[in-house]
Length: 134
Image (cartoon, rainbow, N blue to C red):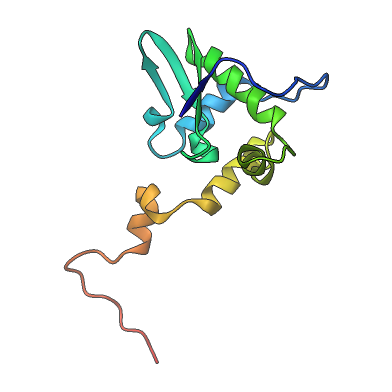
C-alpha cells in the first residue's frame, strides 16, 4: 500500500469533496473499519481500500482521522473520470454521492464480508431445511 499526503492530480476549482465526518461515518459502516481507519506511529491513517481494493490501496495520514479523511476525499474526487484503477472504482461507485457509494458497496460485497449476508445466505447448522417443491 502506498502512503500519501498529497495527490498526483490537480485540484479543480469546483471541488465537490465529501466532508471528512461523513466519509468517516461511511467507512465505519463497512465491514472491518479498523483496517481502514487506524493509528500508526502516532498518526492517523485512512485508506481507500474499502472502495478501491487492496491492489489500488493507498493510505492518507493526518494528526486526526478527520484530517486524513479530508485528504482521502480530495483524492477520490480528483479521480472521478480518471483512466486508472482508482478512477474506475471511484467513478463506478457514484462518488461523491455517498448514498450511491453505499449502494455500490452493498451490491459489490462478497458474502463473507458481511456477517448478516452469511447469516441470510447459509443454512444454520443442525436445523432442518424446508422442503422445496419440485
